[in-house]
Length: 228
Image 1: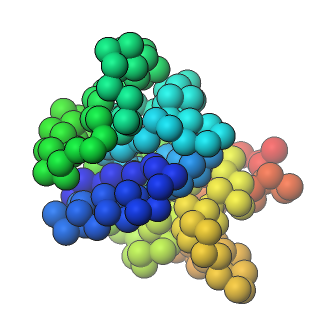
Image 2 (image 1 turned 60 degrees about the vertical axis):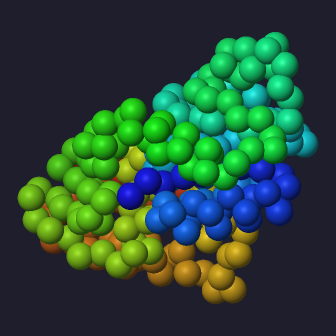
């Protein structure tokens, strides 16, 4: 299943694109500015990013440049009203893979998304592993030391956030944003979710992979080393 991040500060355009992608059986996340996009990419898996150029604050070009600096290799399609050759060249120089001028046909955007997604090996991006922990993003199956772990959808998403950053520390705010975006639950659901994940991920094994780094957040480790 192709997973797409759409970044645009225009809520009408954003909702239209999301609706069309969903109708065509693609999984779509959304962000309305560059900072949100950086947070989502840091904690989620995407096959393609659709990125508007003209956004307040961190614009599309700067966002793309930062993503590439962070090591993100996900294909990026720029959306913009600018149609000069110089604008298109700038988009590619900043790390874009494709360029679509507004207004555009939704069918064309869909075709470009599917074409870019196919360029990346599906086997390479559908499996994540860290040490003896393995995640299959397509089947949502998880195993450690070859033993299957039974996780619900929210626990799986939390573990995916952690494994994509391992062994780096992921802050509480990053995890909350990745799980619920700006619609945070009223109660401290994250604490309960982390407790439940630890019971499945760590309790049956010789050491705990999920560690709390006091004052900073959470991380996965391979060998039970003490948290910093």
